[in-house]
Length: 456
Image (cartoon, rainbow, N blue to C red; front, side):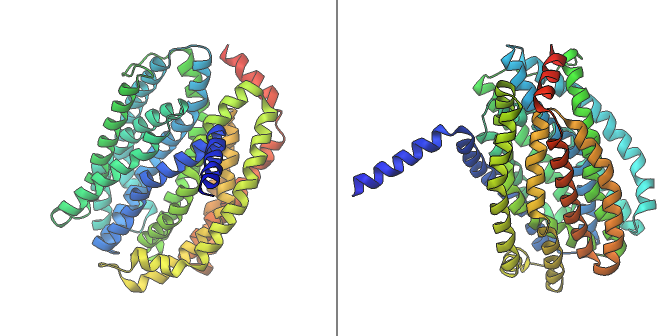
């Protein structure tokens, strides 16, 4: 009997190992759970140590701005670099030279961007927010302290995307844990001396440590030679052109959380913090379900698309949606049913004002309403990225700004803060419909031939 059970388990294990996409998705999800899980807990340590105040409003608003500025580049590069490296490797090109050029050119460009951003942001914020003068000055000081994070996040994303292209998923997936641990240690040790400024110091120091670890891993694996260079060759120009469409789209899409926080500042002190805590609660299941899975998905889909054509991509997409829909609906249902004990575990401790827990809960539920459509939207976006079809994401970004502002304004009048979260959920439904529609009217094999011709 024991031998039969062992034989069954061994056969199941062997079958999983042979199905590379499923295996890589499972392994990467596990590492992402460990790597990102600690980072997702940081806001709740902040809630216990700092509570809800004008200072936490200032930090979360600042973090939202910096995350917006860095994410539009970091997310794009981490994803779009995967099919490019797959293509360069298939052509026996120099991957190290390509990555070194991206690091050098992106670093120089982002340094210029950050300096310009800091120069113009303060007078702009005085016009669009309703922070008092003290809070606004604190926001600007925090922006200067945390601004190096923009360049650091983009560089780590370049290295993470490069390792993912080589199907080295574990260390990139786990690397956010190193950043989070450094951050928490710094906050804990220095919070009484420097207050909310300690959080900014912790994020920057943690990302420096993460970058150093990734560089060490690449050198140890010896998959390519790494450096800094500034050669704008044809491949880099093509990469920047394709990436620019998605960057423009990401600017529009990622500015929506900044818009949400800006409009939340109209609802009184503490509103920005409450919105952020609810958003972080939403990010936990979102990250656990999609982070590792989407990474493996893009890597495998890119290889299959360039080897087998568009019909294989359609088949992969159909099979994936059949899995994602029931899982996402189950997660949504369970979290809404058991949101009270989760809130108690996350927020009912330390100096957090317990009268605000219910407010966080209602905002979180409104975010969860759009969970399934958001997950499906991410799956369809990976299909478009596999084809380097970044113009679709750019066009949606422009639509999303107007839709989000309009829905925020209408729903805030009836539901206050939960209305902002409900607006986000409705936007995710439109995002899914738009990506589904544009994907289904495309001729995939023609797109592949066009990409190959352009590369040649």
